[in-house]
Image (cartoon, rainbow, N blue to C red; front, side, top):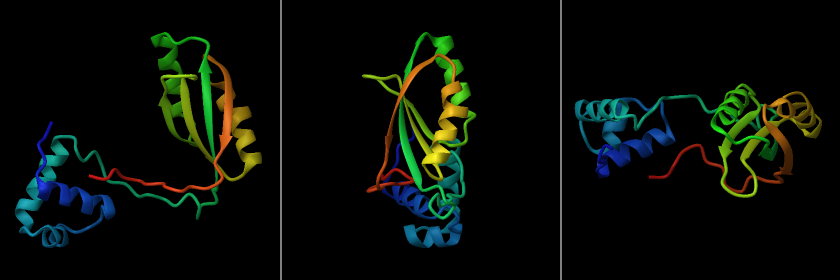
Length: 153
């Protein structure tokens, strides 16, 4: 694991806020010249600390205002069944997040849709067809109080 100093953390914080920041502006903000900043960025990319750059779309502006968390229990939790489920759930674009959970259920999905009717269609056509699933329980989010697209350093 790469050891990060204060300057590396500043670089990552700036990238988290604006991945399109030019190296010259980034260098100015962290107090170094362009060459050392570019070198640090390349090292963080090679170390796997920076895994990519992407556009973050606004779900609200796209009309995807409905968020539902779906708890899933499995009929089989042996590795082949889990792998089959993982592969299938990754193919559902409305599933924004999926976590394997230790506790009262096996998986937790965050599903984003236009409205309740759209969510019902996603459940009926896609989620209910996932392999090795026994039952689900859904919880509708009323409001996003904290929703971040990056990790604080």
